[in-house]
Length: 355
Picture 1: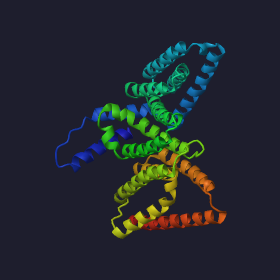
Picture 2 (picture 1 turned 90 degrees about the vertical axis):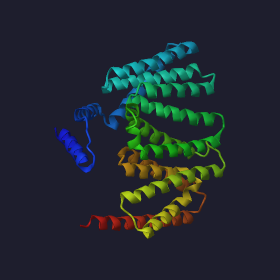
Picture 3 (picture 1 turned 135 degrees about the horizontal axis):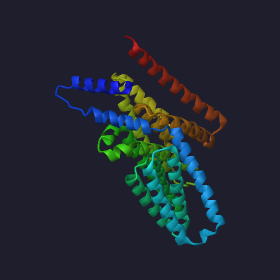
């Protein structure tokens, strides 16, 4: 009841603030809000559903292996298509957790069987997987299946580049992922109000892009698996740094920072802080997700990016071909820069909070 009253109060405030007469379909808005609240599941429950589906998939694949059905590639392909179609059908029957788990089980199993059935034509696998994932994304519009579809699409693109030794393409992909993720975060209002389909797909697609972006960064951090010239690192890092500077500019408005000197200091400190990361886009990529998540108050992305940043910093530190003294100096300078940023922002926030 309290949510209903809050919605009515918000609509009344919007009418009062507008110079024109505005009409809202209050009953439809309240019904949509209640439907979303009823169907809402926490991310932890969704992750458990995905994990349960994967475990069920492995058990089913083990049964098929014991039954020696793997000998027929045509049978595997047909069975894979049937499982994917079945997952789409099950996801439309009910939104309960157990149905989500069953749907994920069929979905993952279907793609696994398709992979075995098309194993002789590696590049065709990626095309088929991406096509089916896109169809699932726009036709089914289930949160978990849409999330997995985004992971499959990004994973297939990276796998295609790795299998064909197109390592330079991986860094182009990470730059495009950074741009796409930034666009999703900053254009949330326009996307969800575009139409009903985009509104349903926005949350799973955004979460999937965050997971995909951080996973791709983790893949690129494995130098033994991704041999590429340093220039590709710098290109993708520059794209990410430009995105970070743009987000920082937007944060100035949110934090009400209008002093030109303060803006210049923050820009300089940001560039100095990110300049050592030009050789690897992993650290700057995690920082980009942190800033974007902070800007839109997206806690899941913020937590994932913090964990990723700790991992990337540790790996970057141990991979440096410097002496222990040089590494200590770099850590000391970085710590000083962070402290300066903290005291600067803390002072401004304290000043703004005073009445």
